[in-house]
Length: 232
Image (cartoon, helix red, strand yellow):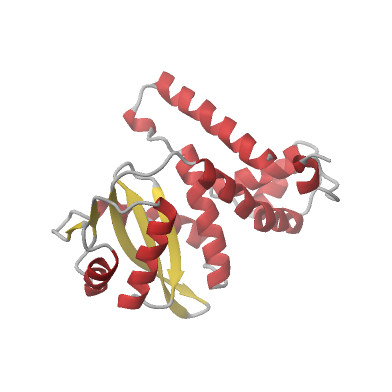
């Protein structure tokens, strides 16, 4: 039995349909019901609840495989935190991107104190395997604590406007949060955002920065990587 067969064992729908539904959900601002209708138009009758279960199960698996295949991030990390309400309780969504706009990590926590910042910095080192040359943050004191205790040899830039790149990177998350009518739990938020980040990195090569031909080449490579991650 192949690994691909075992991954989808006991599912009555072909792997290609499951993979496509999961891709649609994380790639575009669509609900499970939207995807149910899109598949129905193609003659594929599947409930939105089944699609939700597919996304919850297979999305994280695909994301882990995409991350293992990732070529690596840049040497400058832009880090910012965004507050989100989950079941009426304020949480903080910590995000780091590199100089090319790729999402390095997203982490949901209840606090934004020094301990929370250090926890996030350690996650970044585990994800990237190497210390960044430079980090750019706002002037939250927690970042200074984490910088001194976790990566003291890294340059720390807190100058005004330097971190606009990280602040703008939250916009896709806000769009999805509104369409999902807020996250229902911190676990759900972490699962969704981790998968969304991996697929966002794969399918957003900076279209406005390259020619149409180059973009088409990048897109073809992205689809090849997606198929490999979903089938493995």
